[in-house]
Length: 508
Image (cartoon, rainbow, N blue to C red):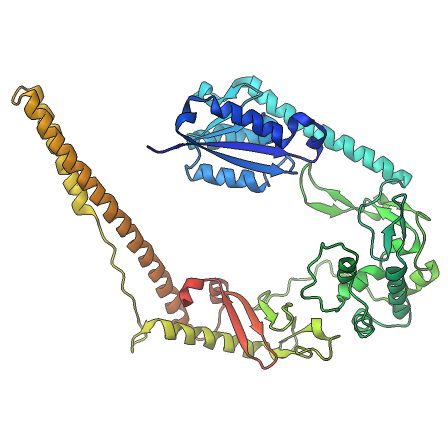
């Protein structure tokens, strides 16, 4: 007998940490007690889904997404939550799942505190009472968001609110305010001084590398802040990092906050606000860079924007990487386009310094490599056709046998009802018939599983055939082939390449 699957869904947002009743332990206790008291608990499997630290205003939560996916696969029979707000605070989305999705897949939904069980509302949505409950949850969330935001903005105006992370060059003092970090602030001053002398960002990056100055991420690691992956850094500064520092007014002692606005409650998307709406607080903290030097750098550093710039598109966009430092190769679109490793420009002794490869040459090498690998693993006939064998077993013979036995069983019952055979004869022949049906069904299940496996293999073989035919028919690399086959291409200094394929089993 198939087990009854009960899903316990638990959610705790950052705001909920203030209330003990909302703790994960408390929710878990309530849900487990409720599930244990259900009649279905005798033959059930209990699964737990926990989203810790996620807002209920949207459904962009990993565990709730996993739960919904399992519902769509008909693997969940019942969902239990402490209250509606744990599942979601968005009335439209919550109502959509409760009224449309869960009934479609015959998934029962129980909210313990709200005394709601969807089994009690067959053919009904739960009425105004239920609707008001998740409307209240949504407006509670919106009200909390507005109040929190208002309090934060008031602190910003007074200069009290500060980010928990200081910009590079600063650190938090004992009273929680920003103060210059002696070692890092000296590097910031050096960057501004080099820029004032007329050096551009790549030149400054090269100079910092020559002097052996660690990157900001490497510096944080030495201070015990292991929040960055520095495996590919190798002491090389990013040009964009230097440009960003040169434009940061906070180094003059001016604090700027509130530059971006969240587009919707509970969302992660934001947009840049107009400068007039920023919170700008002069003389907020000690300056690292003199205002006169900062203004001089702003005059010398070239900055421009292209609001209507068209996105540059090319065949191998986003998939070509350096085989030595694992950074994306830059594409230069001149008369003869090429890829080169910008990352290693400052690393003159590095193996990938001045790594450069012609774009058209790379496309041809990739195409010939893919084609050669396919020819090696697939049987390609003299006429260019691909020879693949896959036989899909069809269990129709067993289906017909089971159908005939079921008919015989029905006929036997009719004979008994009509008095043509006595009870003892009916029982013995029915038992023999049931045994034959069970044997046939077991054989049918085995052959069906075998047939399914062969059909899956045939589907894979068909996919291979399709890919192989696309390549054998093509004369050069196309966007369709790139999207279908290639995850990444690694280029090495000797122009050797390695291809990471999307369809791994094709080349196994």
